[in-house]
Image 1 (cartoon, one colour):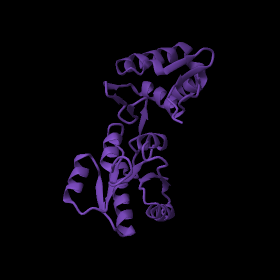
Image 2: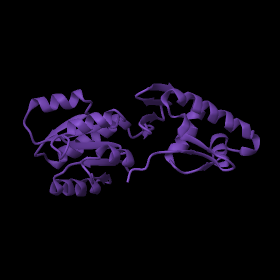
Image 3: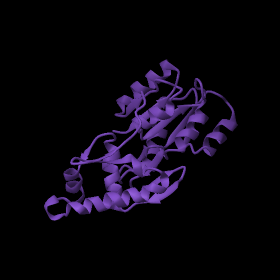
Image 4: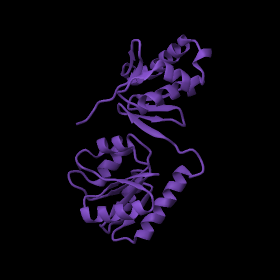
Length: 229
């Protein structure tokens, strides 16, 4: 099931669109605090974002910039304003499509389906993106990108990082990591995992992320993340 984040402050429109999209088996999320859109986006990790231009506090263009600084998730803009510059600005900011209000739901669903098909190609592995400590982690490309730069990881290093950040602030045992990496821990030296984790930390050091992978003596490892209340 694809997750869609609908950033729309018109409660009536939001609930109407959510109900219709749910009927199409999409999982729809809204925004609780329009001043913390990026934090809620990061928490949900949606597969697609639909965002209105006119929003409380900051407009949709602002949040598009913020999201794009962390993720390549597809974005569809909504606008009730009849300004060609809105569409131009949306595309320049990296939006994938633009819909003028009022719109027919059939048009919206067609654009959603086309965008998801183009980006994820239903029949292939989806490009998985996660954010962690302000960095974008691209699982398929084995890349970690932050404002400090980018680093490329080996498949084992990325696998370890993926396991850790998928369960942030939770300890992953050494046994679980070894089993997942090499199928059978009986044929792998415990030191092999240590070497791989140390290499991962070394790769992340230029980005300032190495200290956020903590060793829990006698237990395993943990990727830490700030918790927003």
